[in-house]
Length: 144
Image 1 (cartoon, rainbow, N blue to C red):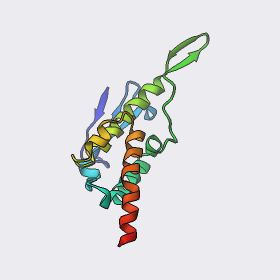
Image 2: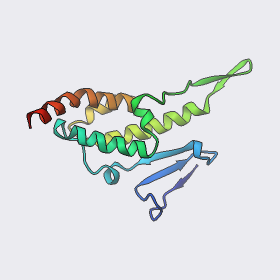
Image 3: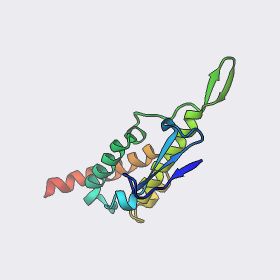
Image 4: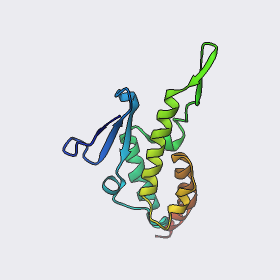
């Protein structure tokens, strides 16, 4: 596995981690929340701003499907002829999802981390934060 850590390139704030084949379809994106998401989620008062900033970044990297459910996890095994074999797309998906879950965990305050730490997938963490904070954020905006 090779790692592109060129900090002087066009995208100095993330790393693209290439899998065995080093093809674009197996490239994994590791988001550096400290530099790319300077607004840390600290509570409902900034949830909508945080979500907008994070989802814009995910759209930019074409990763939004991991958190909105439009790119579900491929099956672990696929049928090849008369036998089942491990699906390489499943492993790639799990690895990218883990990197996104890590980025979400890294972008929330320590007081919120427990909400995210008990999830398994990025979509689950995203939904939990949405459920917890969206109605509180909307109520606060209406009160302004």
